[in-house]
Image (cartoon, rainbow, N blue to C red; front, side):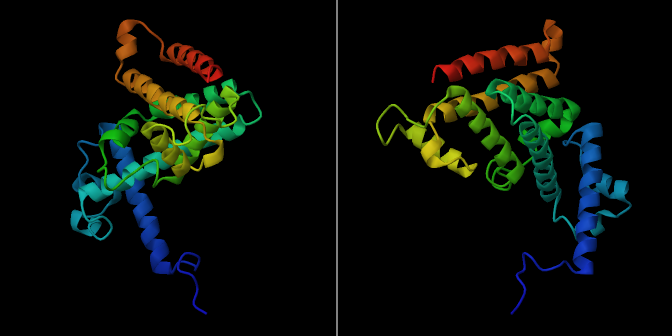
Length: 237
């Protein structure tokens, strides 16, 4: 009986290829950290890893393909950081877990500002879907939805028609895509979880470009105040 392609051991050639791809991605991420994704070229990456641009084409068909790989790697790293924070805070209150999740997101973004910017500007939409293709981000969003649901003390009752609004149906599909059980997913909690994500993203994005510094405001305090408001919103669901 032939071995499953997904479980069979890698051949020596496959291991070497994967190792080389990992080295290229790491070198390219370092260049992004130094100068941003906009100036990244196969020539600069090749120089960093000691390869000619034609040799790189054996691993990445184009600059765009390399950028797609960098975005996937970035989302995976960010997702792992957030998921780790959620797991470490699993025995704490929902409010404290929410602070841990969003705090981990913010810290990663501030530690890797150019990578963070790349995640939302450096990929082709048809090539990279962070909420469906990257498992670590899905787990992060699942932790966020779960925490909001617990903060709301919600049992999943929508409080409306069985079908719900079109938005509620869209949110339910999104909730299922990140692994949240359909029978437990309150549309109100899903809306608030998604709202939490884009509020934190907006805050962090502004902080990265120095907007709050010029206003004499502290990003960490602003996030803490935002979370207080979110917990109050959850309590009203």
